[in-house]
Picture 1 (spheres, rainbow over the protein chains, first blue to last red):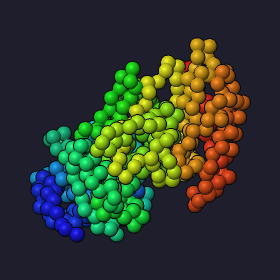
Picture 2 (tube, helix red, strand yellow):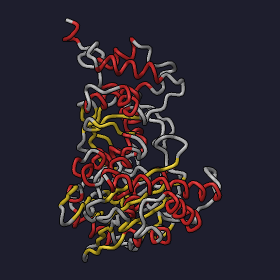
Picture 3 (cartoon, each protein chain N blue to C red):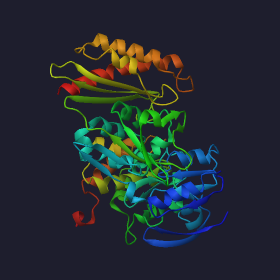
Picture 4 (cartoon, rainbow over the protein chains, first blue to last red):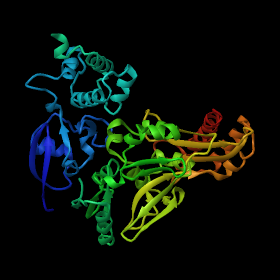
Length: 162
Length: 290
């Protein structure tokens, strides 16, 4: 099959890739660009560990074609940190022990960040709804919810701490 | 492993339709959000030589409402846009509740109403409620457009009335009459999973509080989402009565045509269809009164 030139804007950097059109976004990000934060899990839009943000919305990268995301801004977990410092949501996860094995963490972080982008002050229920598409098999949901809550309350904002 | 295909990206609806008519004798599929299609392609259940991407076509991404014309939703409108639409929340609140329970946020952010209906999975969510709202769809090819009731669009198991050169363009819901209420519920083991069985009801009351019209539809209970017209008829002209709702539920469990699979037996599905029908009629009625 003839490969196509696909320009993907991942974490603010444009990557020019020659891809078979059937390449999924998660394959392009992991195998072609080399960012392995987004995981391959169920590959049936159930588990959420491949979640990335497209134009600020959480999307599962296992079930869309990379070529369909041309012209959109893709953010992976690697793109959360700024100027070499962890984002507030990442600090909150660390502080609250919001993971055990860590396989779901990058997806959880992206879903949490997408939730906070849309709703900066979610209730506990809204946080639980916000991460409904992400499965954690170590069942660390409570600590994840606590982490998102602490982050939403501004505990990890640089400005607030100064 | 996904079979190789040629990817076609039209710039406009017109171009998309002309591509579709050009490839009408080939194996050609239209992709929008692809949240169902890509899974089936990966499992090798769908093999296509050409894939036409319409996700980015803005002409089909709209939600329009007027009291005279009702609601029109473009085919590439995402589930999330419907879920968050104020105008739909005001006039069709049951549809917003339903969308809130479609799969999960990530799928709703990318998946579209048009793709969902054209996929024609009998377990998918919006179809039963749309049937109860008396929805119709607009489909088109390079030569023109035609409108048909949703009930005629859904032909069979993963099968629609679309011809090989046609595409789903729009979903149309008539404006609800005064004193109308609707409700939808799916029975699932996991909160937002596909329903083992789902039921929708839409009830309109007359001035004296009696039933003017009722529409009942079931999902996962037949090869397509179906209306249970025999149960609707017995409610017309009646006052609120749990007994007649239970009777309608009994008819629903008789008239549906479910299969047994790993999720539930046929018997269980029939039973749940009856229970849900009764509950949805009660809920829709309460809403119609309010």
